[in-house]
Length: 257
Image (cartoon, rainbow, N blue to C red; front, side):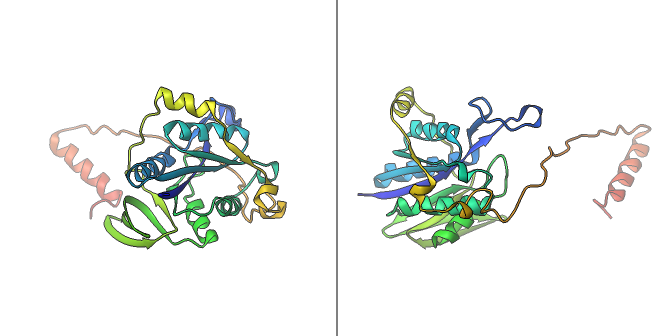
């Protein structure tokens, strides 16, 4: 049968004209940090055999990201879509994903990107692993299948670590781990000629108070773009005077003593 890998992906909003989030095909796309996870899953499947399932949660338009995954070669796409899921924080999102994973059993490996390009929390992968009772290794760069376990190479704070993890398990995949393959025209045609599965709250066996806004212990009060700016100071005078001014600036900035 080979290995069954589930990749949890997200459709993110890349543009919000006028500060308003309106999900359209032009403003949403597959989270770029999920691409290395998808490529890692496909490479493992190609090497060891098996199937890759992409799992996502969101409104109906999020299905476009699943079709993108299918066009890359993913075997199955599942969208958790229900009005009750709207407004979920990371914990409520993890609750829904855990329910989806339960319905997709048996599986060997669950992969996540390290973070998303919109909310950028990096919490959903670890929270889902805990909720599903799976061991987790973060920032995976290399994965070797060794029977019923995986040898995982990860890098954190400049240190390379190597783990042996029993399956089923979960991994977050580092952005540098893999470069995603391009979807072929045939892959795109095949993906959009098929269908993704859409699962409701009833299918997941959850109640409204467990998911969405009602099941979220945290709320976002405000989101504003981070201020970006650059300042360039020109130093004048002789070389010696410029050197003295530069030294003074570096000392005042606490960069040297």
